[in-house]
Length: 431
Image (tube, rainbow, N blue to C red; front, side, top):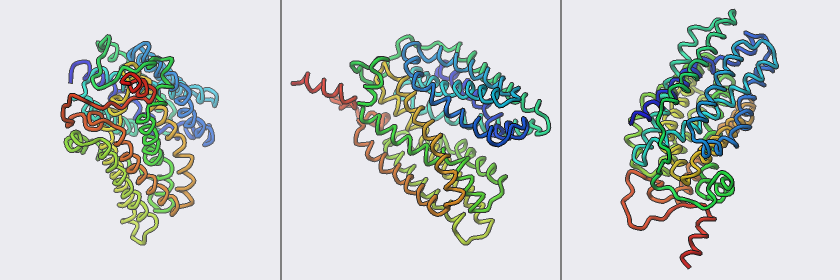
């Protein structure tokens, strides 16, 4: 990696380290430490998602107009302010408003960082750059959570205030590190297309006419709904209610998920980076379908409690294996599909889809996982198989360079996946 890319990765990892200090303990902090009740804690968690949904539709245009660097610096500053304010919030209003600022700031950072990675990488290095980011972010979250767990004391609100101040400091470090990065003034993205109307004003129309991108967004929604949207809601409820595992075991399961990602990421990368992205995503759907079947055994089978616990931990580990396969495929594919002038808008649109899935997933999965155990497992086995079907369907819309950038044979004539409006214009020009 070049110096710019190394600094971006360092800042991204440190911000994830800061998030790890507070994310696992936010519910306990609001509901018990500040004694604002479970209802307020639920509202605070919901505000995070709602704030992201409010700002992401405008983030892409700002990135493409101003560049990702100033957007990232402003977002990191806002997130730092929100973290500091939440650390000293003792009322419902203060906690909700602080959560809104923190949620908006962290949401904007995602597409800004992704666009910076795109600008500072090439088609040959982009896959590895996104895999490295995913690895470092999970490592940072895991270490932050472990360190934070040693510092918190439920009887001492000041210990939680310290966690939020550490988180704010890490956001500021991200902003400072990012400010030292020399971004290219006019990045050249080989393999992308210059599409008429692909500026900020015509961005949404162009994106919605791009069939491959729309299909990828649908696929992304299913991916995040069926996996990430269930980790701390439906799957956790199912594990404690149906499988009868102790709540503390959920922490072990999440640790197993992170451990698989950290250990397997670069081994998996070597196996998948020269294979077709659509086929890799299709395999993830099959792996996750098997993971849900293992979870079904844990809660619906006749095995011992030890076997049920092992099965639930294995379920989280299998999800981690699938995640390590997705990190070098999905995010780089978004960048490769984007017209050169719309990389920020494409990244923001995909981030918006992710946030929608993370908002809907717990709302649907939580009640099902707690009460409708059999239907819950069957539903998400089918969703996982749907990932496989959608991935194979998407593969038919991609060019060889988009689907397998490191193994596609060079050709004098390359079919390009363009928004339908541009494809029609090209056809008319040929006539």
